[in-house]
Length: 313
Image (tube, rainbow, N blue to C red; front, top):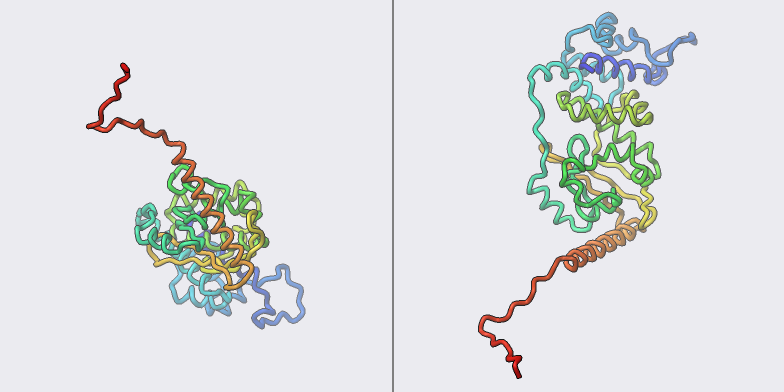
């Protein structure tokens, strides 16, 4: 899908969701064929001509200026994430002409050190496509304990959190409000897709999810836009039961993001997370002991200066 089509679809969807009563547009009791704003009403609010806005929504107009986009964003009552998305998607075609592809994402040494110092705080490192590039023991146990801990180190088996949320029953059952979690994932993917239009792997993931999940396809068509920075989630963990965590995404703007899960001090959720960390640590210790026991032990050799016993007596 090209940039003009994405821009037009986004504008049309947002316009249809904005009711005249929401912004004080009088209807004088007339019956309307559609519940949302008309094009001429939106154009009037944005201070542009109806014909120009129509061409923009239909993908028949050159790229709009930042000033015009800001005016339309204001008329549509877009929040900051949606406003940035509007500007990004309007520039998609221009960025594609550069022929530059995003570099593969790797986990910097500093990020791995950060995982280490977090200790028992659950943390995972996600690429822009939500591939799991790394996780600590507790992060693995909280978000996807049914998967192999070493999977992120193998590109062919690397988990993808968006795929897990929509296609994995275990992860789906973790969230008491799964639709809320799913909408957050879709909203963030919308943001990333506009920022990296040349990322073929990202668009392949979007196509796969649309084909395999009707829920994803429906949410994607809604054009929800929301950068994932932080949210509260009630989780139902199979080992420690219910707990409420705050999932926060931290990024320096370059490289992958680190998602950590925290709980309120003194709460039952904090106790559940501590129990999970304890179980995870004990499980890892048992696994290490099992691996040590399974290793073949070298045969003992006689000391260099020892004297062999005389068996002729």
